[in-house]
Image (tube, rainbow, N blue to C red; front, side, top):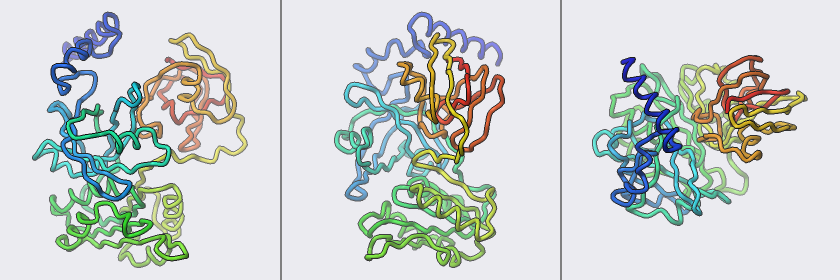
Length: 367
C-alpha cells in the first residue's frame, strides 16, 4: 500500500514537472478528445443521453458518465465543467435521480433551473444537446438519508426539491418504514418540478405524506407557517431536511426552533452561501500567497478566493459556497473568519476554505 502511494505521488510530481498537469495521462487529452471524448483523463466525461422539460425554466439532463466515475449517495452534489465562450466553467448541482439508476443503468440526472443572469445555467439550457460531453467531478456532501431509518420532514422550495427527489426515490427501495413528510413550496402549479414522480411516490409509498403549497396562486403570498409544522405528526422526533431559497431556509429555521427542534436534527443544503453576522469586526489585511510570490492588501469582507482572483491568480475552486472543499488550502500564519459560521481560526497553520475565509489582519497562504 505504501509503495503504491509513493508511486502515485511520483507520477503526480512527474506530471507537474513534464506537462504542467496534475495527471500525466491528461497530456494526451487533446488527441483522446478527437478519438473519443469519453477517454479524456483530466476529468470524468459524461455524455448527455436525454434532455427532459420539467417546467418552462427547468430541464433534467440525463447523463452517462464514463465507467471510472465512482457513483454517489442520494442527496449529494457534483461539480460539472463545461466550455462556455471558450472558457471552462465549473458549477455545482445536486444529483436529482436515485443512485439505483446509476447502479443499474449507468445513468445520472441533473435537474437544473434557468437563472436570471446565470452564465452556466443559461448556456446549459440553450446549448446542451444529446451527445454533448460534460466534465464531471466526484460526488460530495453530507445531506444524506438518515441511517438507521428515522421519521423525516423535508421542506423544499422551488428547485430545492432536486436533492430531495433523489432521496425520495431511494428510500422506498430500501424499505424505509419510518414516516416521511414533504412540504414543497412553489410559486404556481406550473412550477412543480418532478410532479409526476412525486405523485406516483405518494400513491404507492404508504408512509409518505406529500403537501405541495402554491405561494403565489392568490393575491396574498402564502409562505411556510407555524400551522404547516403543526400538521406534521411527531415533529419533534423528526430529522428535518431543508433545501431552497435563503428566505425559506431562514424562515424554516426560525419556526423549527420555536417548535423546540434541536439544531443537530436540522440538515440544510444551500444554493448560495449563507453568511454569518460578523458584526463590527475589523476585516481585511495583507494577504501573502507564498508559492505565487504575490502580496495583496484587502479591505472589508472579501473572501480569499475573491482576493486571489482579483490579483490575477487562479486557485482551484468548485462550488464557491463552502460545500465541496475543492478550494481548501493551507494557511501558514494569521487569522481568518469563516463567513459561514462566524468562527475565528487560530493564528497558526491549518487548512481553510478560500471561498468562505475572510482575512482578519495579515495572513500567509500556501498558494
